[in-house]
Image (spheres, rainbow, N blue to C red):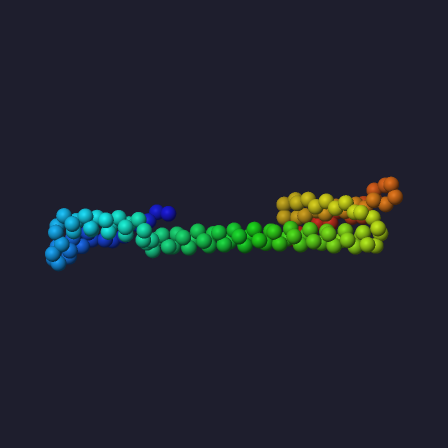
Amino acid sequence: MISSPIAFDSLAYVKKLRAVGVPEKQAEVQAEAFYKIVEERLATKQDILALKRDMKGMETSLKRDNKELEMRLTIRLGAMMTAGIIIVTTGCNPIITVKKNGDKFIIFMVIKASNSFVKIYDSVLLTC
């Protein structure tokens, strides 16, 4: 983050301290120390706006990641449910493969019947 300097008039601050009886050297040292604290620890409006932009970008990224994760979990759950139905109805153990191709998922499902493999679905394309 690039921050613009905070407007702090150290000369005016020194003059105010001198006006109430603070020795000049002490007033200068105090003004310098105060300036460093203000410069290092206070955020400017630009700093806050930049932080808001960064947070908005992170929020967008997290929403996109969550959407993708939700899609992947939905597909896996669907495949598991399908496999469960096949196991219950046929007593066979299916082999399920899910591959991603761009924004589409291709699901291959094979069950072993007797000693040969029979393809139930060549491919099912899901656009999510």
